[in-house]
Image: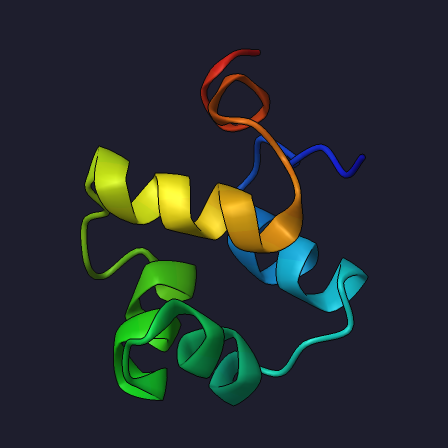
Length: 68
């Protein structure tokens, strides 16, 4: 199971570790590539529901994302 690093690039690194482009990840999450890019750049806030969808996509748990 992948763990999300606790730095600014965590979402990007997790996506890359899973071999996806931003567009592919966005399509899998049923969002636009622009929205996904904003998540990676931290210019848009994520709700718990959005993080849950991302955790499901990448095969990690919410604890992996939120706990140190």
